[in-house]
Length: 284
Image (cartoon, rainbow, N blue to C red; front, side, top):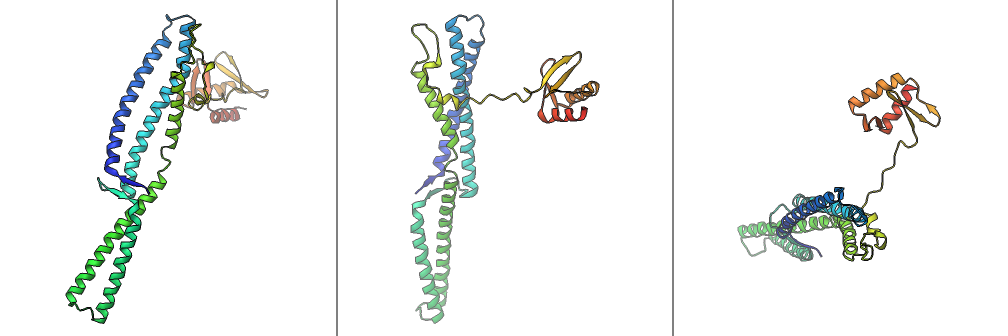
């Protein structure tokens, strides 16, 4: 059964945040160094070119994913503490052992049985104690039962909390596992050829890389034929030519000012699908 000492958890989170910050800073600096080498056009040759491609293909995804995972983990751990305080117990040094739940339930049953016996004796006036003593015993038992019930409720809340947070780090851990596989491949030096003194990833197992590299985005405008005529583009889709070019040009100028359209490569325009459809329908 789960146990928790929230004070220990807070200490762990604080230490993790410090180490995570140092790691992310080190990775940022490393990426800058690699980027500087990759961008240096004076470093030429087969070895240099293969190394640049290798570092961009293999090292960049590991660096970026690790930094993203650290940031995600930081947010999850902070939220874990906040959720525990709001859903279970706001005490700064709460300690909960769910193994005690059954013992608390048994104690509550014993107190309830004694309390019921006391009520029976008070009604029959045969308890052998004065009325004041009986009332004091009644209040004492009520307080003890209330305290036990409160402790039991906290444990029950913690069990619900623990169940709902079991998979909180699942996505982060999955990505870090892929990073670990990548680091293992890098350390194996499979990519470097001692014969040609070049880098080649064909000897590496790159299944992990597919899970770290985002899929390339499809061009939503590939089906449109674009022809630049003087000061505007003629767009053709499925053989239909956009008419009223002057009106279209005014709409595009307005759309550029409002941010609906943006320059991709001057004078090429990138149009959002919804706005492109609207321009198409209103100018035909």
